[in-house]
Each structure stands twice: as C-alpha cells, then as structure tokens.
Image (cartoon, rainbow, N blue to C red; front, top):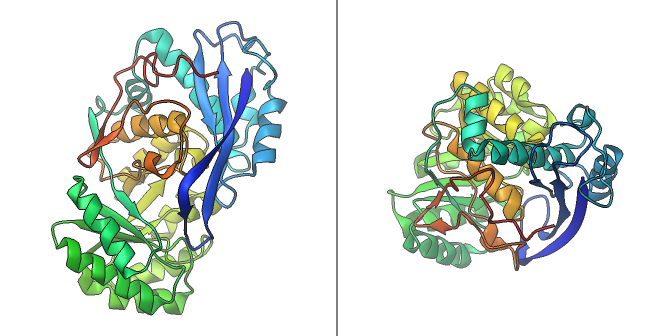
Length: 360
C-alpha cells in the first residue's frame, strides 16, 4: 500500500458554525495486486481526507494507515486484518481510504462499477444512473445568500442547503426568508446549523420557520443531544429534523432508537467507508428515516465514491455531492461533474474506469 499526501485549498473559506474550512489535506491510498494482503486482485485507489470535528486528525489518520502497511510503494504489505484494525469510530477517514481502495480493486477485477458491487452486497436493486444533488449556500449576508441561491437555480438546482448558526438567529431567519422569496416555493430549501444552537434557540427557530416549508433543519443541536432533537420532533411536524454530526458522535443506531431524526446525512468519510455508509442508509430507510449522502468537502476520488454510494440507495433525495467547485484545484478531472442539478454515475469498472490512472 502506498500513501501519497495532498493539500488542496478552497476557492474561499466555507463558513460554518464550527468555524471556517479553508483547506483540505489528506492522502491517496493505492493498493496493488502484489500486496501481501492476498486479496487485492487489481490496482485500487482510495482517499483519506480527515476533517477534525467530524473525523480524526490528519496525524491520527496517517498513523493508522501506516500501522496497517502504508509505506512507500504498492508492494508494501497490508495486514490481512487491516480493515478490522482501522476503527470506524476513532479513525473513520483512515478506514474509508483503505476500504475504498480495496473495493475499487475488487470491482475493477470483476468488471463491475463500484455502485453495482455495493448494491449487490446490501441486497439492493440495480443502482441509479444519475443522482440528484443540492447546492450549498454559505454563511453570507442576505444579499450574498440570495445571489448564490439564484445562480444555483439558474444552473439547474432545485434543492438548496443554506448554512446557518454562525450568526444571530434573527439574522439567519432573515437570510432564509430572503432566499425563499427569491427562489419561490418550487425549490426545496434545507438549513444546516452544524449543532450551533441550544435547546431554547432551536425551539424558537423551528417555531419561526414553520411556515417556510423547509425540507429539513439539519443538526440544530449539539451532536450529543439526541434527547433534545427528539423533543423538537415531538413539539412540531412542520420542520423535519435531520442529523449529521450526531451520527459520528453517537452513532446511527442511537439516533434511530431515540426517534431523533426524520432524515440522516451520511458522510462515507466520517462513517468509515462506502460500505458502512450504504449499510447505514439501508438501516435508516428500513426505520422510516430518509438517508442523504454527502461529503466532507473531499477531493475527486472520495467524491466519486460518494456518488456510487448515493446511486445504490433507491430513490434517494438530493445529496450533498456538488462540492467539487468549492476547491481551488483538484487531483484529477471530475468523472461525474454536476449538470443541471444532478450527476451521472460512472459506469466503471471500479470507481471510474481509467479516469484516475495517472494518480499515484
């Protein structure tokens, strides 16, 4: 196994309630048929791009990968139990990188697209050929938010996610209503607070947003407060509640058991791999909770993998996969660019055929 570090800047800082995201740093993870793991039939490529707060640190990610064989070239031995040794809770980005590389290699060897392989493993029907996606509106003032929303709608998006929580609630309410008036009722609108509010603020928010026709309010409370999220759902039905950070903090099963979510936002990088993300989506759907697949603002390899995961979920809602434009540069051309609010799923084999052949 070989690790190749990379660092990519954003076109501009993405302001969130957890602070700005300005740069993404991680590793390409390459495995080869000569690996001592004994189960790598072809070259495979993965990506481990940790995002502290959602995943482990970059240093912890690198240490975990090197601990299972992340040395200097493709022939570096991989421990036979490597995936079992990479904890999906403590080091999810590391496990994602290796799990993706191994899945890519196996799918390429079989001549299957990754989405086909993933769906088959979960007993799901044939994957979709395209996936709907939402546009993300950062924490700008009302004028900036409206401008970004109008440009997204003109570009074919019919679902927008607006970042909230970094400003006073009054300011966020003003921004959301400004966007709603600008784009009209035919565009789905989501709001994402990234866990910024306390219970009193969250209660006030859902009361004031009840008539806005939000598709959902994402992570209104801190990640550990599942009881508070469940109480919000019990108090009202006009504003569906989605959970994101809570899944990394408490786990999907705890969120489902608490009755804390109408939807769950699943990040393969934060859940420990595409296999674990799809399994989580299936469990959520079986519990009557809608899954949405999104990224942690990853480079092209991990974004492509997330597209395959989303494609394997039957009739999935718009997903947060239109994040490549947030990067100032990327590792390779995007094999599934956004067009008119959707992405086309690469038909393989593996992640995207030979699209990433020039990467380490």
